Length: 112
Image (cartoon, rainbow, N blue to C red; front, side):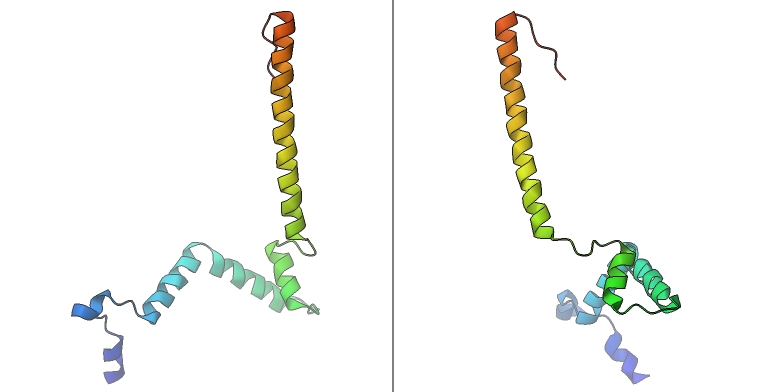
């Protein structure tokens, strides 16, 4: 049929042009390779088979996929940064105290 002619790959100067359909197909293959399509299919089938449909389907999808719900991500990031800083400070303090022990005893301190 004549409508299939428009689906032929570009040739010549047009060959370097990436069509939107080609980009969509590449993206679909990426999602398939990475397991996203399979995971979404499974969770949607699970939702379909759920005898009592949840009031919030999006929260159901997030919960089924394992996404945290009701968690303040920014607060967790800030806490993580604070804990990393505290860890760096304590590591530095351990090194200082180890050097002090070595200078007082004249023997290398046991490393932990």
